[in-house]
Image 1 (cartoon, rainbow, N blue to C red):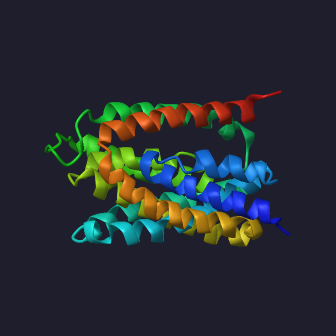
Image 2: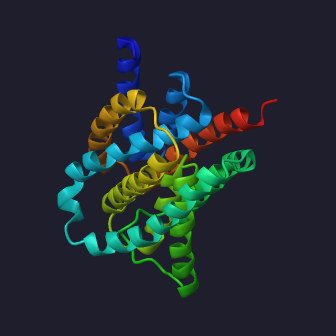
Length: 254
């Protein structure tokens, strides 16, 4: 049974996590440590965090529905590739919840953030991007790999999704960011369905955090309208360093 204080703490953590998800694609920077503080073990915190992150989707959709008009077919194409990866990654987590992958994750997060920062010095949607066939194919493969990462571990998965969707799409950044958040929420939903049959979710802690994430996801989509891609990329870089440091300490400490 949760205390009133812990219930409020998880709601607040969820709100902050939802805002951070929209601004810097780093919901796990808040949700994962918060669940550890609340008493979950690392695997349980990871699975429960995945369950709670579903609730960012409705908040994002509510705030960005008009902007998404005319983009649903494009969105569906990204979903097809990413969700296929999510299924594979979720099965891998239930089959091989190994420590080796956790030790690599901090470096993967840093590499993703650096790639995002360097991917485009101009705000997406303002210029026609130069693409190659190899780059397009690689980006769709990247969405599958990003989906696998979402299902397996998920911390900073939004950064990976944003890199490839940003490369593939000519839409303005607000729309690209909304697609990234909604497809991420769907990915977490698919992973949760698989987890329900093979693992347990701490619903007592998941529910208050999910409430906060819904609120934060809605508020975050409005705040992102006032930020340029370059600012968001650098904010993401800062948060990536913090999260990578946390995960490096947690996985490599003796």
